[in-house]
Length: 90
Image (cartoon, rainbow, N blue to C red):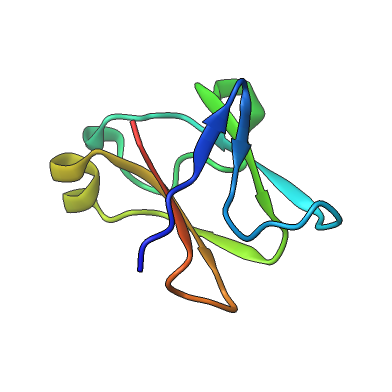
């Protein structure tokens, strides 16, 4: 079962997130596939978009094929429930 997050105004709502949870920020660069390789998530100065995700979830860099053919810019996975993930296409 895939969970879909929704955007309410400028706030991203993650299904299953609790109000008392801690959050971490992700800074996405929306870099093209030709500049693939560990970009995004850690450098605020080049960010094209940002969002917060629950602490304890782990970001992973998509491979070059996912980036080039599907436009996936980042993936954040819940380590406790692997079927819960945030995927950003840019």
